[in-house]
Image (cartoon, rainbow, N blue to C red; front, top):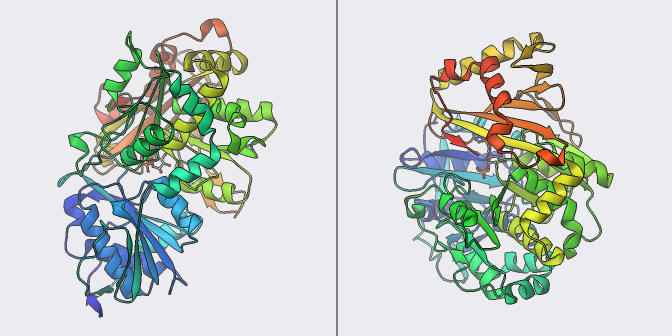
Length: 542
Ligand code: G16
């Protein structure tokens, strides 16, 4: 029943920060999906007879690619495929299911927070047996293979019914369709004080959760409304749609603006939150206050011991390099390890597996812990709810107390999207070329103390990842970071990360952009952002 099909390579199948992301028409080219999946299987060893988890965020083309993956997994010798009903699995749920059922690995079909639809984005990423994104040595091997591939294997089978829970068989491989929510909901119950959170809801606590027509809808309905007793309507936009209702499922202040406006309004709920396309990102907004992802990481780490799953304390904290240093101050106070990694959740896997870090976070709205090996949007929301229930304070009060004891790291990211790749590369090359001449210079009244191109030395496996972002540090602890995104699908996206530390509580109520204006101007002067990109202002400010 398995067939070998001749094919020719595509030149553009290098996975980025998180898997292969392209426009749908690119994936729809004959053999495009097949080539990538076969290149992946050819780069793995020892999966014969083992289990592959498959699911996605429900976006356009999800169901078609799941059928292809089933037929190819069977032909390549997997023994069992576990698939979320309807082809749905959030990224953190897929990570949990891989771990729980001791699968060999998993394929998650998602382009995360990018829009979906016939002309929008699609993506394929592979997670290894620890539940985490494949490390660079695997993604690079897949890319190398994709450049020389000459055949793929596929079983001739009728489409599998992925909408009925139960086990069937496809070309000798068992296909198990599971409830995508149940295992994940049980895991959350084991980590958090559902009774305390339930009592908080029963006493009138109001929350708005925006699932953005993406994968977390069914998870939020089950956990927040059914298990924790939040009023029906707490989860909004909860039906996953192939085009996310025409929106970007990106939980930030631009794409979740309606939620933000409501949270800043006179009758705001107590707590607002949102998650992205595949459920690994989070947005946290209290009544009258947006909590930056960097601050959220620090506040969650400082309060995690209030949740049952973290009562015995944290082993360490890890954050990506561009994420603010707010969590470092918490780690210092707790006397635990702090690790600075490149952008990309895959870099946390070794630290989590080695028991060096318990909580990890990124400025790009990702927070998570060692319960899975992915960032986890609903996990962050539930940990916040647990903390709010135990402390009986508002988000605003918790943030103010946090800043009073640790100081405040004003922080913002400016994105210049869809810039011509040549212009973006020229900017980075020019900046790299002058890094050694920057220390000692004064720009806009700010003295540069250090400038480098971040390289990460993994303390667990000794691997080195270079060119992970340019850092320019100023006297007093402020800094700007520039790097090119690894997740965009058109042209290049330049990211400018800006941070300023303010120890004085009397200055903790400033407007963020105003507090950072001198650094933003200095960054433009140093890197020539406007000159190179031709843009007067960023496309997105978060
Ligand atoms: C992915 C990665 C994250 C990364 C983010 C932004 O998130 O998993 O680790 O921080 O992209 O990466 P970049 O700055 O290179 O665009 P997601 O939610 O898109 O999978």
